[in-house]
Length: 366
Image (cartoon, rainbow, N blue to C red; front, side, top):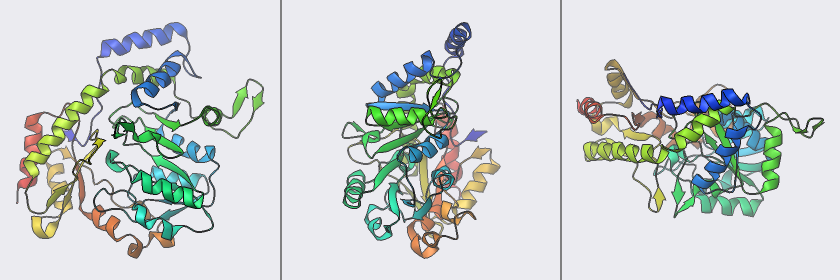
């Protein structure tokens, strides 16, 4: 079977060495040795000042909103994984959906201002598939209206704009280290911030609000990354650049094989951006291709190839959110059109050329 993505696994014997050290130390969690080492190593690798590790990306998103004390309404995208909007819901915040750009599938910065109300406190954009949002325009709007910006950067590990990490934009950025991501710690996540005081508050919140053994300073939760996750993360960091390079080759082969086919479109790399190829989405226009996206999806599935319709349905179409005025179809024409056409093809470092050729062959069948 071929899945849309598979975790990159380092040598088992190296991981066993880490596990033996954890076993010897008897320190399993609560800011242990490997946790501290991983935070330092990721700051250096990613080019960021401060990072706080989490047990998963969803808890990191929920905690990021708590960190900045976000309330009221937050402008966000309907074209994302549900955790983006669930994090708002869990904080009692109303999501306000804005349409996306047809070129990048990211939140359309030119439509944000029209969605701002007196209750708006923040913008929560997503770097979809790791493609950076229009960070300059979004920051300009935020500064004008006094809003916070939290980026869902769960796909954007290692992405740079003109040599600067995309994680350095906005007030906070949130990463996911889920097993299907370019870089993973089995499960895991992180919040990137820009000053020591904010990191201190984040670290309080992820550990029940404890400042010391006897003092609780905030209504925190338990979202700590344990030592096994951190150890695996340190090991993965040794191989992540190699994994990204291999993903780039897979993406290149897809582009060369699918280029020029009527009805098949894919995203081009953005100038001055170093991509990591978290996903390889294509759009299938049934009128010119001759088959629908779902036809192709089902054909691949019948051949044990598991692509993903990321992101379909839109978050705005789920029962929890579809009653919001901003969720109406008339407000989101581009997002709804993209959601009906998008298909993410398998992409991971160990995807063999023969397997990829078979995927392309099946797609081309009319």
